Image (tube, rainbow, N blue to C red; front, side, top):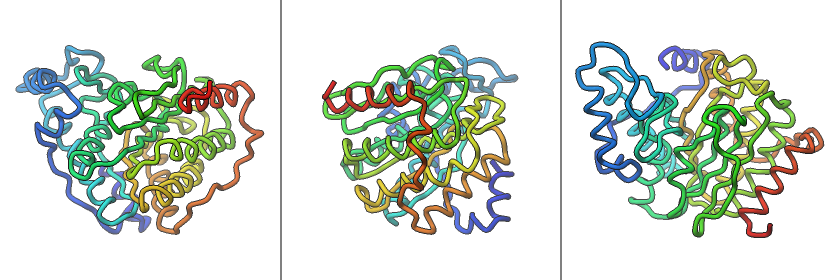
Length: 312
């Protein structure tokens, strides 16, 4: 993250920064059960070498608990700042979080940063939150905690890890909206077109007072962990669609929280594009051709939307 920050500063994108803080036990416990929080602390304390957390495929070392608390706190700081300033704020944090379930860490994730930040906002301000997730992988942990004023909207490769995210459904007054994409890839035009249709319709349904974005850039072509074949230029039009929804429903408040993405070049380019898009006030669809979306993907998207709208 230090190298990404340095590149963003050199490009004139990162002119202002905010200090992160540790998330408190109370803040984390709004999402994760206390026995699990204690387990993470206990199993990482004093580790002499890296090992797997006992709950799953998350590698940890002696610093993991402290760093994960700081990442979650950084996401909370980003949410607080974006709400106060009514603008977009990006939390450049690691480890990622969207795979972390209430009592299970997995997939590099220990604590669910976006969910913890969303619940902190609701505890302080109230209101509904829409979490938008364009990471290559499905955010199974975030889906697990949706409800109680939190809705979740995701595109992701399927059947790629973790092999979830095929169903869309209502959860009380909220929804889980999943649009699985073929792990073999999708064109940049089609990826953008999906989000240009999906985002405004999800926001109109959720009517959130805050949007939090699980910003994972492992969808970018050539990523060592993901790779949907999508070009780095997709970040700007997707950010414009997000900005449009944020301006309409949230007074412009949107917090981006880093998830996946393992190319420094792609991270710096994508985050820079997002920042420039919001700074320029771009809030309209770029006009990606809907016809670029393959028929099978369009059918899945329409079926998912009907399901959460209660019109299936």
